[in-house]
Length: 111
Image (cartoon, rainbow, N blue to C red; front, top):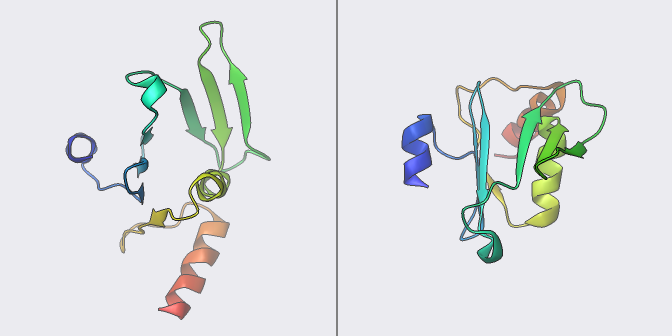
């Protein structure tokens, strides 16, 4: 994880110990996961699109999946796969969607 944090200049915003990590920047979202049967392979290219009505996947002629999703849809998928996922919100990061802004306000009331 240190390698990607250094390259992207940010810490991961979501971590599942020993299984998954997600970095989010203004330019790219990068996630890595532990899959012993797929070491060194690219599983998909994901594009965060605030206007996506639902998460969608298409496969190109090389077999690579191209995914399109909102931040909220991506978070729901991560939580479905890894209920123990830990999300970190940078104090200075602006919420990227109305749903994210609502979630941040709710979290602030809880703390």
